[in-house]
Image (cartoon, rainbow over all chains, first blue to last red):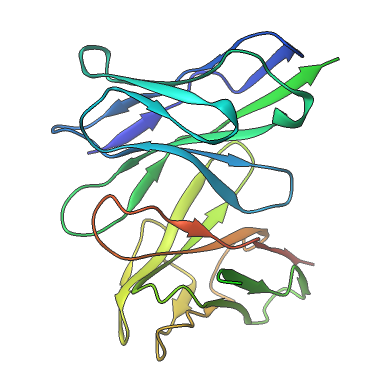
Length: 114
Length: 113
């Protein structure tokens, strides 16, 4: 069965530092992969998604993610974090088949120090 | 503006009462979804609907019911059979094809007293 693991529950970085959030997935074929961001008490906003093709995907707000099939990973990166990036980040994989069901990871809560 | 609306934002109910959460979208999307979010558990799928008058159970459907009488609307009823209903509930919609982006509403926080 498909699954997603986000090993880091909570990460703290300093403003201006680089960021990498880890995501590992379990899926038999080429997956659909997504990163969403959630501010406290709000819905989720899509940052970026991978379907096929170029393994380095650019998203909104300066984020990017790299699909590595050999490592079953889809890590999210940002070269310089801003205080407004403090939020919870969710990785998700498409469940496969004809539906558009998503399997979500448990999330990584990002705190940004001044 | 196109989007997904959920109402109310906060909902308080007494134990043993059924409660219905509203979800409306004007994106002309065929598929709609209900998720439950608890701290440290990510999002878990309750029900989803690929098309009007059709819906399927997700991973945690027990104690919940839905209807899909209109394309724009997908209300969720939390019944008294749901053992631990206090949570944050998120509705989403998508075109419906595999791999499509799901767009989320702002959520409803349900507290059962």
